[in-house]
Length: 96
Image (tube, rainbow, N blue to C red; front, side):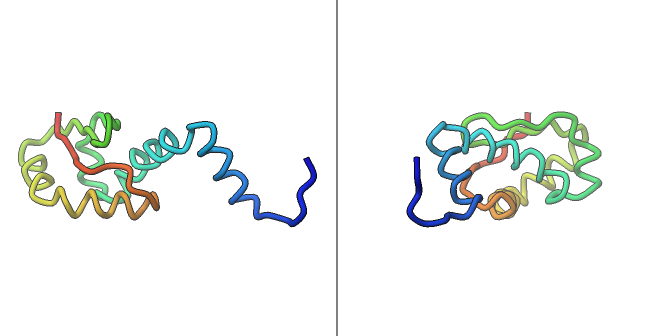
């Protein structure tokens, strides 16, 4: 297929990922990977499991005190994680 004008590789790749249904899983992976950076090293060290289910980031936090602190910061963490990814990926954080 011949293109009439050059396109940025990032745009072409983004279109391909969206067409193939791979953009959402990629963004979910990015949210999980961004968790230690956004939450900080102390929270990351206490997190034994992190995954996205639906539009929720599910976290297993070992320390009950830290879990409570993170619960109070939930909306700010959701906002910062979505900003880090550059898309609205999650709407909630659940502690399991």
